Structures are given as C-alpha cells and as structure tokens.
Image (tube, rainbow, N blue to C red; front, side):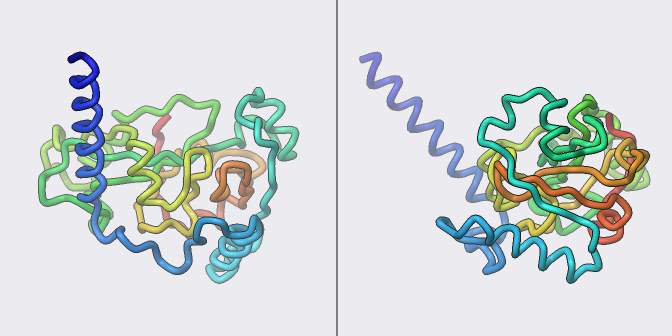
Length: 224
C-alpha cells in the first residue's frame, strides 16, 4: 500500500512539473542557433563567438576547465582561468517572479518580466530584496510591491529558458531574451574583465565589462 502511495505521489509531482514547463511561452522548439545534443565541443565556442563579434564585443576569451572544477576552492578556479582575483569569478542565475500577475507569463516586458537573469560574484551574497525594490521603483510604484517576489527558478525551467544546463548558464545566446541584471560590484572591478559561465558546464567565458554592458544592456543595480 505504501509503495502505491509513493508511486502516485511521484507521478503527481512529475505531472505538476511538466505542467509548469508547458506554461513557458514559445519554447517548444529550440531556435537553430542553439546546438543540438551531441554537437561537437567547439560548436558552443563558435556560436557564442560569432554572436559576440557580431555585436561589437571583441575582448573576450573561452577556457575549458576540468570536470571537477566546481569542487575546487575559488582560489584554484581563479588560477586556472588566470583571473585577476576571486572577485572576478561570477555566475548567472535565473530568477522567477513567483508573485507576478497571471497575465505576466514571459519576458516581453523588460520592466515587469516573469523571469530575470542576475549576474553576481561568487564571493558576494545575493540579495533578492534589493531587486524587488528596484523593480517596484522601475514601474513607478504602479504595481504593488508584493507582486514582486524573485526566487531561484527550478533548474528545469532555467534550462528551458536559456538552453544551458546548471553551471553552464550564460547571458549570451540564450533561447529566450531574458532581461539581465548585473550587480553593481562587478562594474567596479579592476581590471574590468570578469568570468562567467560559457554555455557548457566545463566552459567559461571571460569578457570585458564595458563591452558586455554595451551589448547585453543590463540593469545595473546593487544586489549583493
């Protein structure tokens, strides 16, 4: 009896998850720019490099890292990437507004999107409340503050929106044009060149901050 109950609970959980994924807009068919399963390792580098150079980003580099990279301390990651400091190591996180009105289901409204992607340093502690206050102000207080509640999106949804797996998420060449929020602390780094995910778990992208900003046009706020 217990086994049947557990099986039913697992099935209901999977159905709920599938329903959540089906609610994502216009994402059933990945665009041709996203490499298919089994693509050669160099495909991601070539695709993202083409996107960057086409958009006047010239100071960037890709670097492959060992499979156990995320088991390393930040100092070791800094060294393998030849980054200026551990503060120059950053990550991209997909957030979902769990309290968005029912008609807000996609990213078509940059100022009031269902999803955002925030870029923060590994050394910083992300503060969702500052983003909540920012979005409230961005909409001139016309939307109740309680309608903004940013939380980490489930990995399945993050992958479906971006086209990238966990630890490989980057703001470049995403399947969905998700509004980007860049932590102000990254803009203040010296030198102005930081590292983030490169589209695959073992691929990292280094990029000049000013060129990243000119292309991605992120919201720049203090969110850590």
